[in-house]
Length: 524
Image (cartoon, rainbow, N blue to C red):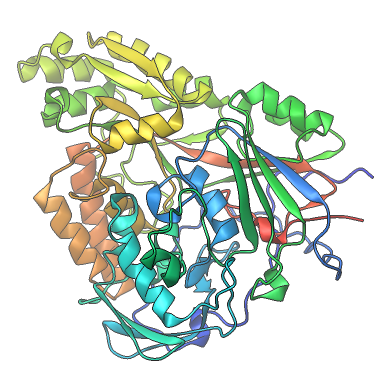
């Protein structure tokens, strides 16, 4: 039966009982971005059948995850898999992006810096063990050894087990990022027994999530099956099997969806959006999201060590041309260093598109454009197109560039190791603290190797500020400093676009494009 198309939808999800507002709350969490205009409300989908999981879903994605172990990557492609197999103490509300309890049954503030949490009883890991506070403590220390997710632990300095299900987290100083950090895969919980035995989570990611990992065929697919003992029956898997297919080429993903080989496409080819919207049996979800896409510059390279060189490069790049060429206009051009959907972002200090001004700036400071030659790493069709447009734009002011295509996992490793000039990066932080800290704060996790003490001081001050208005004011000053400093070259905020078989009910898709596959089911 033909289903109606929705250009911009909010689908009501089933929430765990209670929310942050129902608990004893610490300092007010930072306001979450409200990306794009509020969509027209739609009725919630029909409830799933009461019987156990049935059927299967096949999903197409362009990029392969670097790892299935939560602590061993910081990739969105990996996060999609991790939320199937693991849980955090909190999860993200798919409607307003705020953190709400998941593994946590209740919590309270002991002081401005100490928070007590109690787990739900009866949470089972995939290996048959019950989750306790000891598992949370072991996971807390285990993931901190990996740089890919260590930044997610800067908001907590210690953990104390109180009893079998109760523990406390200490932030050391007031920290507004704590509850948002607890949502991410860097804080997912794994069995202590496996951590102690040296279990390889990159081969067998054992968690407590609604699905169990079964197989990974590199370059081809990943297979998951429903977990029979998931602790929350309302959010247990509704389908028996989920397969992720890695299909790098956009038109191939589209054709696979049209022919029924694929049920849901995560990375929808922008050129095919109108075609899919016109299809009688396909539903398209589309909404502006808060994700920062940018050209990451390695500040350790001599080409980018001079702020005037970075400013000139920024002034030579036309984001509107990039968006039109790579996405057919289905993205929001961005010149500010921090996405402007966030409270606390500012456009003060943003440099305009001005090639003539860029040439003059280089001449004024005695910088030979040819000396700024650099390579750009690209991993997808869209990034290749953007790289070609940037290449042409920079050549207009005398800066030669080259383009290197490589797979996503390799590029992540190269950029983490600092062995690159520049590349295209994406940061899917859903709040301003995450973006400032994860992308621009000096230290671990900063792929650009930025080292700006003034900026670091402002970011640290904002994180430690409990008053939301005061925190926003500090972030506005940090935004100005960052805009003038040109930490990277912003390109765009993408539209979150997902396309799926209209008989597939997908109750939870957020503005960031994240989707909860545990709630997906087939209409009768």
